[in-house]
Image 1 (cartoon, rainbow over the protein chains, first blue to last red):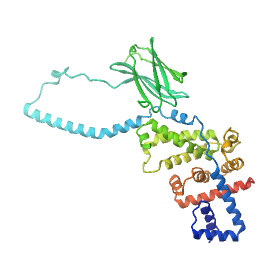
Image 2: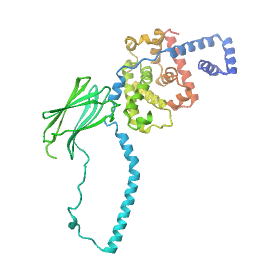
Image 3: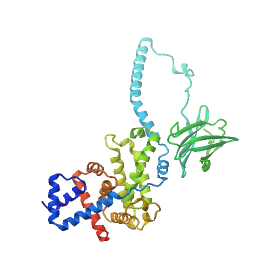
Image 4: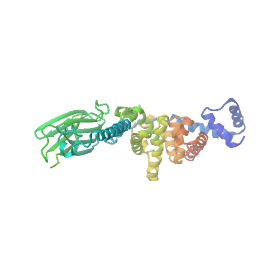
Length: 234
Length: 171
């Protein structure tokens, strides 16, 4: 057996991976070779010291730092995936429906002839219903204790706030608009009921140039502030 | 837990951080020696995990994946650091509480110093085997190497570490 093979046996013995035959082979070589025995003892000592080194506790604020460092739009991948999951069947149904509609229109036109001019039916369509919120101003937060973003949006019912906060401790937000002040409590926790996103209506907000003041509190202490503005014009 | 994270569950991700922050931080610390650098690497690792969770193959062991990221990020950090920063001083030794956590202070300190003198590839196998206590199969998966190569590299790494300690008059 070569020297390298005997060395491999030493390491295997340290790892407790020798069978009976290998053990006796190594024992014989160690007996006949004091230098090799010294090498084995040295390696054993090093490995024992390595295995005996106790793991260090990470910094206490590491966890908070990690959570705060996550991207503010953290739930986006889920939404995107959910959309992907639904889009394929929906598109299939839409294609079937569109195909049936075209075929029906062709058949109808063939049997009845051309319908009235498009201008004759204008103004008969129903309203578009609830529109998607239209974000008019956004502030991104990169505070020591709070991350994320807050958006001011315009919807059919009026203006509102969308808060997406990430923090290691509950965050209270004071929302000041005009003479009104609203307090939203317990935001930013990973276990908050609505995940990281919260929306609130802001009645009374809507004048061009009107500002919405935001104050962020952690454990009752102010940790940051921001201002959103209703833009002039649409 | 990983599935829940992939579904955007922040609480699950927080649990993941709680479970893995210690081994990730320790692996980075053993690779880099400097606690501040280790902390930066740990933060980067979890951010990468978060960002790439969609690409993680659920059939693979999660810890293999996160430890692979940890080692890669540590090696990247070593490349960015000036040599004197990576091996300088007694920053760890001076931190209160740390020394109390090691059984043999002198030997641990000597090993920490000796580890910085061997190549990152060799340091990585020492970290996986002796600090994260992984088997050869897991090490092979993390390093994307055959088990035989992993063993060979570990044997060399131990030998180099012993040589470094001998130079310091420790062994």
